[in-house]
Every structure is written in structure tokens, then in C-alpha cells.
Amino acid sequence: MPLTVFCGTDLVEIKRIRQAAARLGQRFLDRIWTAEEQADCLPDGQLTAAAAASLAARFAAKEAIAKALGTGIGRSGIRWTDLSVRRLPDGAPTVRLGSAAEAVYRRLDGQSLAISLSHEREIALAFCVLISGVTPQPEQRKDRITG
Image (cartoon, rainbow, N blue to C red; front, side, top):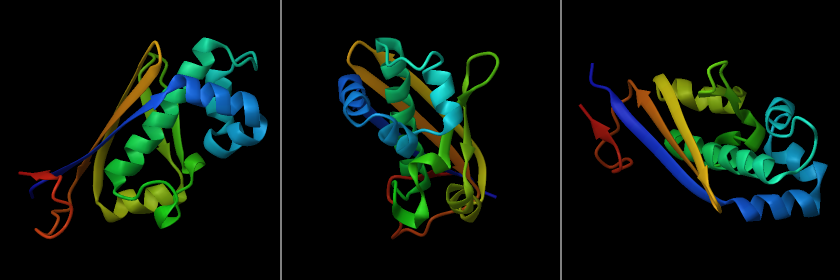
């Protein structure tokens, strides 16, 4: 059976995330990041430069994952907190999909999902690759590679 590669990427300005978190506070943090993500990024509860970079990278990751799923945030019922980015013991990022995101992943016959995060000075970047058992029809999503 041929597999399809779905991908998504996103860039975000770290300053934008830091300013929003400082201005909107806990309400903003709770809307975008799960409690576990906040504990990973803000271990002492302080919005340091390193914490803002980590939050921004996860923000970009959520956007990249939603793009790979083909939904974006808010469509198909996917909320920011339905996509949770955690660190494995070796430091590698991993994703936990909430119910709405999991349903889309299953509809795509998702086989695997991988993400990569990075940040440098003012920019955070994330890339997501989703391997699917679904072969899109020619009129669907021309950005896919099958084989």
C-alpha cells in the first residue's frame, strides 16, 4: 500500500509570544499550552528569554502539526491544547494528540508523526512530518507526495 507524506512548518517571532504572555498572562498561557507544557517551559514560573523561546517553539510546532493534519487550528474542532508537545527523557520532542486531533489523524490513517523544533535569536521554527496510509485524490491537497 502506498504511503503519503503530509508536512507542515511554521515560524514565529519569539518576541511576539513573550509580549503576548506578559500582556495577557495566565489566560493566554492556558489557551495555548497544556499544564504539562507550561511546566516544561516555565519550571520556575518566570517568563525568561529561554522560557519564551521554548513556548514559541511549541507554538510553531502546534501550527506545523495542524498544517500537516490539513486542518489548521480551530477547524475540525482542533484547539491549541489538543496538540501537546513534550520532551522525551533524551530531550527529543514528541506529540500527544487530543481527541479532535486524534480523530483527524485516524481519518488520515496516520502511521507516524515526527516533529523538529529550533529557535535562534528572534525566531522559533517547527517542522512536522506525518506518514499516512491514505492516498489523496488528485483534486485534493496538491502539496502531498505519494509513493
